[in-house]
Length: 272
Length: 345
Ligand code: SF4
Ligand code: SF4
Ligand code: SF4
Ligand code: SF4
Ligand code: SF4
Image (cartoon, rainbow over all chains, first blue to last red):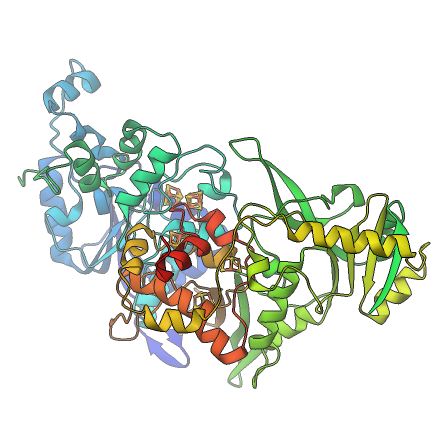
């Protein structure tokens, strides 16, 4: 670590950064450690004071807290509230933190006790309905994706350090998909949520010939009604649409609207 | 223009003569869900990879002159200050082997803005000037309305244009390079019979178009129909996905972003092609969006193509290739949109 961080000759403060995980696979944090080529530069840019995936020491004050995972237990609410108190900027890292992620699939079952029994059998643990961070604390910045794209996080952290505004693409995945000159999966007979999902992943799945499952949540102004029509035109059932809409949680309200077309945004979640 | 005729098997020889260069051409890309063959332009390494009887490529040849993403310049902080490095990203000439008339005309239209304007774009010019283009005649597809746009044949913008006469190719020669090249293969001057056959072939092709766009007085009609409810109806369907602009051979809009590298010692300026249908296309600093609705964005796409560009250049910014409509999942096609705005639907 060079002693003083500077940008264009102007000294910069190296932000103290903490990484935390609630209920998650820790895949997003691992993504950050993944690229040896840029890891040293990343570590030079920030002062990491808490990162269980990468180090054992820890501290309790930080400028930026990256919180991965969703809230599925009462004790996590307390941890999250404490992190919020100690952090100047709280970043929801990945789709679990932003939307509940894959974990929230269980919310789709009406009987949570049944779910608990199916999963844990005779060894029940205390879990509740799954929530994104923003249900309990103020989230300053969301980084979407399951998993997050490392390049994107590196860009965002750089922008934060040099004081640039952080922007997410507002348009859908199709824009990146066609710029990668992919042949549209609908033409190849596969469903895709690309037309309504926020871009930023550089069409990660569709460039690998897999339809988008919407892990980044809805694009701004997503035209779901039209996509639903397209899905039906191409022969895909409402169940196929729901499977995808419900997978990561970003489209929860869209899924609810499909299930009960009369209620546009039903009160699906009870605030606890 | 000079005309020649040569036997089909000579084409492979022509390819070999050009093969010291990078060759791009139409190649098969499998079939769609209904078994219809798909094509795209790609670099080829063997004459047999070329699918010269291709219908239409899914994507246009645009990326070879106007990449979807391009680094315009890079910056580095040095001991003395800082350095800027500009690379127009042209490394070698490119041979385009088998381009249809619509796409040749599309390059000519891009030239109007990017090459013949007051401030020519060096990144475009570098690539464009290093192209050797062999055109080839086509079979109109259901989505093609190039004939309505007057772009069904190319009169400039290529080196050589081939028309299939059965066992032979009829060749139009437009450049000295092409002439020299043809002198190295066996070709003859067209006989009276071959000329007649050529005329018959092109005339017969012109009867096979099914899609049409009525362009008469279109600029005025668009002015008159600015408030038409037809725009709202199309806007409701539009996904604001940008696919139409990405597959379009003539859309050139872009955005430029600057990124500081993780080491804070380097930065780059990168250009990405945009689409006027995207929700943030007309969003400015401070967050105001001049075109917040999909209907207004879609409308302006048509206004740029069929009104603004015509007023500036006396031709439209559309060659009628029909790719945008074919690729649009919401089935928004120029013939249907323009007919509805004219009140014909
Ligand atoms: S494959 Fe998906 S993301 Fe790509 S163009 Fe088609 S719908 Fe859009
Ligand atoms: S293509 Fe869709 S599911 Fe895949 S990474 Fe991108 S947003 Fe997520
Ligand atoms: S017209 Fe079609 S392709 Fe173009 S942005 Fe709208 S939905 Fe996408
Ligand atoms: S607007 Fe559509 S039909 Fe016209 S040139 Fe572009 S892609 Fe082709
Ligand atoms: S304004 Fe729209 S239609 Fe015109 S070139 Fe740009 S993207 Fe294409």
